[in-house]
Image (cartoon, rainbow, N blue to C red):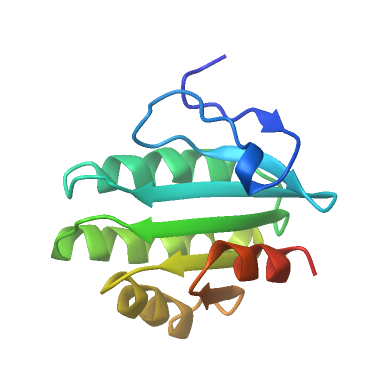
Length: 138
């Protein structure tokens, strides 16, 4: 298995098992019987963000159209390039996503709101993971 290939695990967000790169590891898990892709962009340096977005983009593009439910956590230091890369990444993924819940901190909330308003109607912003997961599995 590739170090960036996600592995399905059972349980909720607390039972997640990270694999591959410790700084960015996409994970599929089951929450209330629904498969969710968790993408945690926290604690990454500005230079790491574009690499992480590209890794996620490759994974997402392998999914059937309209099939993914994604939980995205955004809390990393970023620069203008990182914000623009996130916008490109998020818009490019819309074809594969059924629902996308974003938990964002700081200026990431502004960036995610901009993405939602410019083509990602399936995306909802939340202040916490519990509310985001509840919405994802409705």
